[in-house]
Length: 358
Image (cartoon, rainbow, N blue to C red; front, side):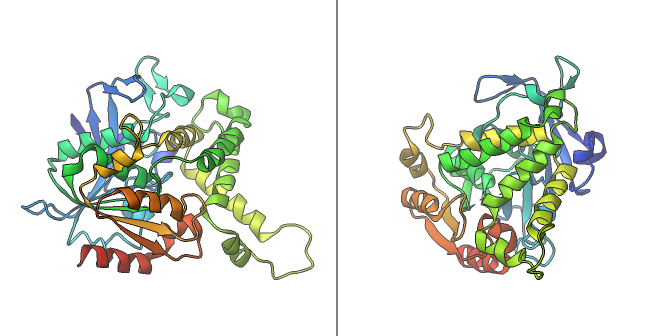
């Protein structure tokens, strides 16, 4: 294993921004066997750290990021991480790793396939949440971490957190699972498949170029936003002041704008792979079912449900709470739906403070 500095992993425009100067990369030169049985000859894991580990390793916070986020929580969670914020590097040693299959430095579809000498693109193998957690374990061992005080994951980050606390239950003191579930639902798969259909409807996706599928990705993002927010949020934030207009509505402009923003920082191939990883999520697979799997968790656990989340509903979080021994369930009231975890900083501050008793 070796450390590669940030500049050497900036290969495509998708890595050239939204990854702060704190980014590092671990190159794991050993074959990485995926859950499917397919093999990656080596992997790279992009990650950031903030703060310093104390002698007792009692201040480590590991954050698992959401779907299109990166390894820098100061970038994607600025209201919660940074100097003077709840997760302050002066108090904590904070780790976040870019997930396998993404496009912010960790091995993914735009990485070079050693067999062909060109990027994988559509030939990148299937990755599951368990594979992503397996990569986290490699990084953890490299960093010499033997105990994690707080593991926190939101959305697909929550999937990772659940998988990790099940597969290595003695590693964690506290775990916080936000807006997630124990196994993927047909409802989520339907949204994901709709987004993949949009990407595949763009002929350039099949050209296997770094910008391939950009128009489809824009459409996919528009679909995704409808599951991330709520009807009330759209009706309030995108309402028209001109009752006479017949075109060029604010809601249309908003969808276009958000689609363009994602295209500028992501790629369709990673999006496709990560959506499949979401579909594969099931903590009970090969473990005798989700009830048995969740019962293995030893960490002091907090499950946070956003009351207006239509993607991962309160029912999903109640199921997790019911089967993790001694866990606590907290309802976060939010106008914003699933994206509430990205926006409701003040409420989360209070919830985390009460749970961690700081």
